[in-house]
Amino acid sequence: MDLPTQLLTSLQAQDLPLPSPTWLASLIAARNPPPPLASLVATARARLLASDLTTPGLLDASYATSHSLPPAATAAAVAVVLPRAVVVQVLDLEDVSRSRWEQVEELEAIERGEGTRGRRVVRLPVGGDGEGEQGEGEEGNDRQGQGRGPGSGPVAAEPGAGGARNATHKLVLQDARGQKVFALELKRVGRIGVGTTNIGEKILLKRGATLARGVVMLEPSTCTVLGGKVDAWQKPWLEGRLARLREAALANGPE
Image 1 (cartoon, rainbow, N blue to C red):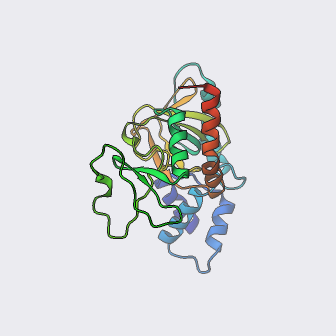
Image 2: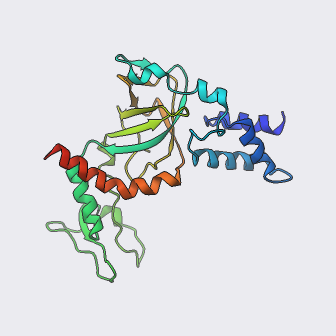
Image 3: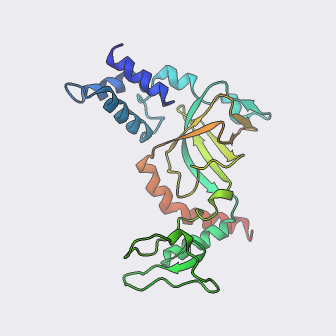
């Protein structure tokens, strides 16, 4: 097999979306002579996972058409089973197992220099060298902090990370053709979570995954988190998250 074919075969074996011939040719021609196949595959994987799947010319046209969500599935009133695997990217996610007010209060606490670690509340120093304050009624059972080396300051936990095992997340996903769909964890998927999942991260929806009334049902057996991040999306999402949560909480009233 020639080099482009070998590269495509390797990417396909990793369940990655297949790039267009033009994109592939530019990747190979970037270095002369081309690097070893393993290096090319690693570079192609990193760039694909860091790219917007809807970018014109990125993906092979036939692949994008055949490996997208069925148009009728996003609005179907009955359950639809995906006939083939589809790679999607994360546009938004929310922990729906916690009230929005609870999440707002936690984010505001972190903005004030406070955070949670293990079972206690710590106050992070803001421009000073003060020690963290132990929360009232706790005996300092900081299991997550055990084994930290000397000089390691307290670290604020990512909002939502504390209840990750029991959390339920709602996501907005987008396929290569730009179709958007909601997704909901039917069973806990370990690599999905606020503070864990990046915006633009790619998820493989396996053949047999179910869409119920246009919502993808996520569970470990029918999806695989491939990784990645679109930098241009991640920072604005993080910066606007508190404002969005506060607005939604105010609109819905006390939860």
